[in-house]
Every structure is written in C-alpha cells, then in structure tokens.
Image (cartoon, rainbow, N blue to C red; front, side, top):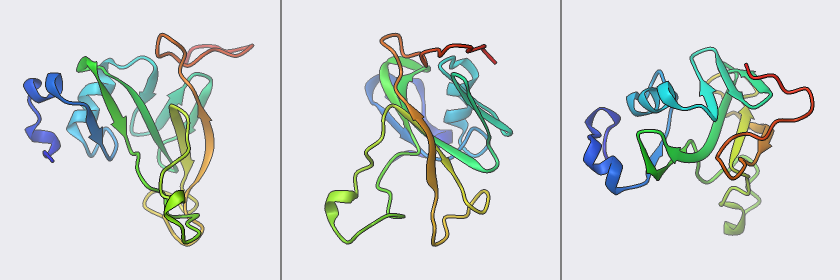
Length: 139
C-alpha cells in the first residue's frame, strides 16, 4: 500500500494499481485522467461513451490499462459492495462489467441505508474504448 503522492514511475511499470477516490483527492488518478481517453473524469463530470453524469452525485468504478504505464491495469473504486449484502460471502464480489457509474442517493459521501446504486454500466471494446451507439457524439 502506497500513498498516491508517493507513487513513482518504477512501481507503475512493475505493478497493477488499485486506486480509490477521484482526480481531486488522488494525485495518481489526476495524472492518469489527464491523458486517458476512454473515460473522462473531472470535478464536475464523468463521461464514458454517451453517458455523462454529474460527478458530485455519481461515482465511477472501472478497470483500464493504466495511462501512466499501459502494460499494467488501473482499477478504480472497486471492491466489495455491502449495500445489498444478504448475509452470504458470495455477494461480496461485485458483479460488474468493465465500468460502472454509481448514483449516491444523497449526494457525495452518502452511503446511507439505501446505499449507492448502479445507474450505468458497460464493457470496453477490444481497443479499450466505449463502443458508440447510434447517435453517439463524442463529448
């Protein structure tokens, strides 16, 4: 485990990265999102293909080749989700595609009783891009 501000190029080349937060709270995500093209994430918006959401009320989770070391993966905001936990360990692993957008019911930081819920999700294509749909216009 390494703090975002302590990550140097060598471990990026050596290891896959699992990161939590957003580009404002995590300097590694900020650096990776500066050059990432499959998804775009700023303080105000998250965009994946033709899905664009308010980043103050939504949180993405995804896996992509790491823009800072493309031979390794970057996994963001992923892990067990207990909001719909039914008492069995079998439900501790998320069953999501390559990317998902979670709606925070009460806004940022609200993982209250209802918990966040997935409102958009999808797979990347073979080139790690969000496949376009009819009428898709790049943001």
